[in-house]
Amino acid sequence: MARIVVKFGGTSVGDTDRLENVARMVQLEVERGHQVAVVVSAMSGVTNQLVGYVDKIMPLYDAREYDVVVSTGEQVTIGLVALALQKRGVKARSFASWQLPIRTNEAYGRARILSIGTEEIEKAMAEGVVAVVPGFQGVSGEGRITTLGRGGSDTSAVALAAALKAERCDIYTDVDGVYTTDPRITDKARKLPMVTYEEMLEMASLGSKVLQTRSVELAMNHRVRVQVLASFRKLNGEISFDVPPGSDMPGTLVVDEEEIMAKGLEQSVVSGIAYDTNEAKVTVANVADRPGVAAALFGPLAASNINVDMIVQNVSSDGRATDITFTIPKTDLPRARAVLEERKAALGFTELHTDADVCKLSVIGVGMRSHAGVALTMFETLAKRGINIAVISTSEIKISVLIAAEYTELAVRALHTAYGLDAA
Ligand code: ASP
Ligand code: MG
Image (cartoon, rainbow, N blue to C red; front, side, top):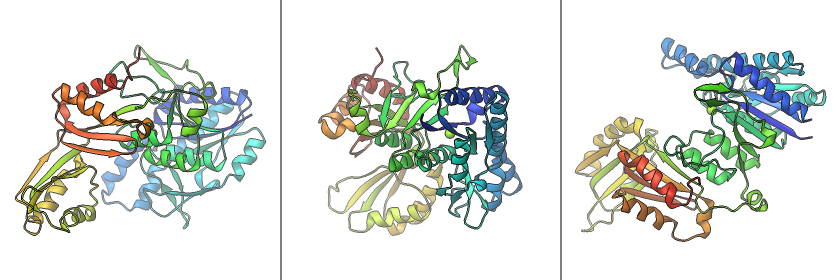
């Protein structure tokens, strides 16, 4: 008998049919003899609606009241899921976050979980009662409701699994696993049976929206085995609930590299191709080539909360002036322009070029640590298609390049084939 945490996202609890399906999936796990704790999101669209109400009344809101409002979506679903379980004869009850409690810090609107009291849930489990817990929220030291930031219920689920020392944390979402690349771009994308925490972390932060990045960090730090899977599928536009429960391991398991190796699974060098079209490229031309210039350039951007991602600085040909190119979130482009233009004289640059039609393309794989030539394959593949690379950045397990956005699909498909990822 295993103890598992199962989390259902907004689309999995999007209407009453789906809610009853969630109860069916949980019942299947209970019937297999597992101790189950359930974490749920708000019904899809509800949190957006609540945020909308707040924005309308007070766009520069008091974050404490914002949290009171936007946390309510999950309170509805915990009650409904508990009822749907009871209706099937499964003993269940809901717990609000303050009843456990799920303690967080005081950063309203983007709080971090500090601890989770497991006593109540363990008592329920011992009595064969399924505990249903709201994701996305907690209670601060001063006793007020907090929320964890959008998409935060993944993090709630992983944190609860860590606190309960659960065998696994199943995250039910609207995709049935983690793919080698976006299946909307190529029908040759394959579902990965397993992926390492490190790879999942890169994929999450490089544009794959499957799991909230923080939840992957938490899973990695606490060695929580996470499975990504679907609670329903779409067949010719129709919803079908004919899908296996998590214990059949139908999804993608996010685990330690050791576990994958122990299973004797052949790890390919590259496990996935990710892309992100939400960045913009900025080039500052002719800045002085002397110590302190990069700090003078990036300091004000950081002070304005603009997150710089990729950076290249050209070698200066005359030893006096150079160009610096970097990327930032597209939405921050107008602000970045303003911040830089304001300091044009101080920084001494002559021109500012920006380009929002770019794509950051990344190949990810822990196998890169031990294989040479991975970057070369990427550069050659792109060159063969006449795709120009503007910026390159690398880490131990990923290579990212910046290309023109119009080539995104072509490049993703070509790389998917070049790294041998195509489905047979
Ligand atoms: N309901 C919250 C949101 O929409 C939390 C979540 O779904 O993870 O952001
Ligand atoms: Mg989500």
